[in-house]
Length: 253
Length: 178
Image 1 (cartoon, rainbow over the protein chains, first blue to last red):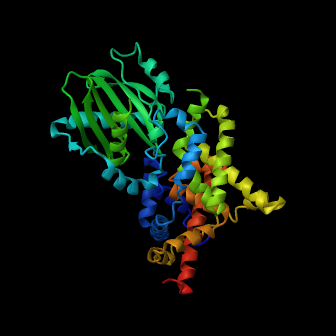
Image 2: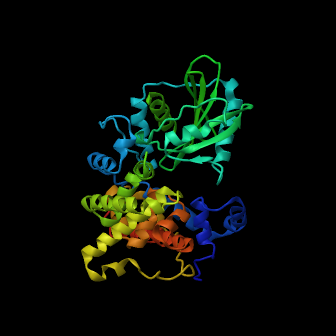
Image 3: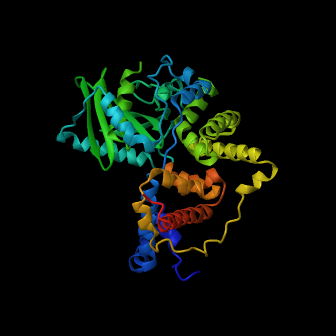
């Protein structure tokens, strides 16, 4: 071990990369607070990471993506005609740019859910976070809406609508049963890049409500009702991205 | 409805990441397109063996292997060995990252310069850095994509950051900053 290595540098790096769990992080904390080598390297790692944020993310030509997506079956998945409207999924890193574009394109201007709904927002987000724990996310694993929808039959006293948004960049991962607001609800699970989006569905007698948004602990929630169903979309995807999902979902037959 | 649709659902969300990785590994957009295309064909072939784990790591793993195969073919018979560089020094030999060069990195906001520094890294360090910083993969995912243990991922990441900081520092000294 050289004199400029305190023996904990890789652990320090792992901590800064968000790779340590709470116990490991706590075990490192005492050393980290007093070690000058750690302190110096911590600022260097952070600086290197900031510099790397400016590295080029190489994006493929849309034309190439379209031909490739067509080649691997996206045309059959998407019910819509191939057109410039088709958006091929973009990586998370482009979300800042995407958000600006999507915000401009989004026809819906979301109102903020009233404060009286905070309890239900909290319950939704807690449930979503719990579901993200390993093994909790999916009861039925299928990218096929015609598999997911029948799966709910007999497990619920209502038939949740299931839609496939793969062609819009939100592939279906599957579904889950959950218990929320004192009743059984259907949860449809979608992905977008590394983000997981969940759509909670349950019957309601409430009037039609246009989508309204809320945020809690870094998670975004959009709630609306239509056709006698309550819908709540929850994700750590940024607000504009979740709006896009909701808009696509409502537009898909 | 068949396995083609299932494959599309697995592969489609990762096409841009696939291209970005391929471009960083091959150094050219045309090569990257070829690699992504070839990788998708291979992925479709292997799809029946995909057990529904981490689809992003799975796709990127195939893209990476395809890229190295293409590079090796381009560089001739002994090219394949180029990417199996011995880890120079283990975890024991960790140089200090912090003796000043971080200032240079902060100051040099020239895009092409950062890119050039990354291009200059050995392939196994470059891929680790790209997967971590641009694709935001976890150590475990990087370990799967690059087929090395997590400990190796950690030391490669460290060396990549270290070399980047050092290169940035030397650039400063030569005064090639605007």
